[in-house]
Image 1 (cartoon, rainbow, N blue to C red):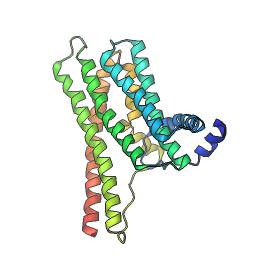
Image 2: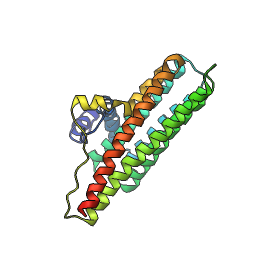
Image 3: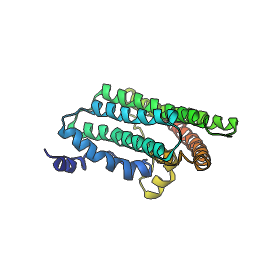
Image 4: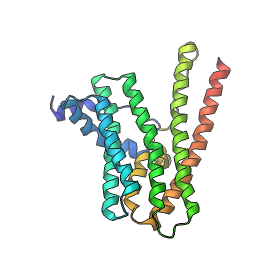
Length: 244
């Protein structure tokens, strides 16, 4: 099939938008669609697309830590991170299109996501050590953001795994589907937790007077979102315990 024909088929191979933040829903998935179509035409596997995504993403993360601050570096970093994230969407779309889902591919994708969730903030910490006159206490912010991102990712994966395990052990007990709005308002409300927004923020990396406070606010917003999500996940699992 041609790329256009594959794109048409991909429109029916999209996952639910329930719970998706605005950038992921309205920008990243559409960006990933032509990449998935191209990968399908080239005969690539989802795991190969995941590997290309990892190369782009970790090249961008390395650039955050290693390149001197400049407009050109910020544009390069943002471009690599946005491309990596779009490819991260493309591998799932390709798997659904071709019916080539695999446990090994799912594992590889999750390991990559876990690594980038932490390493991107550690790279920011390294970059901040080069900012003249920056209060050393502010270096706590990217370190704390790394902890929040890691716990958020693990909590999301763990609650999904435990729900599946409960469904296998107690098939007679219905498991409530993951909640999360599909409205535009909900997508905008949870956008601080959207990795895509973080990618775009790196356009300001070369202007510390803007990047540092906005990044700090984003870290605080993610901490609040984590508390809300953790409370919801714990209540849902307690309900399953009680039902069992």
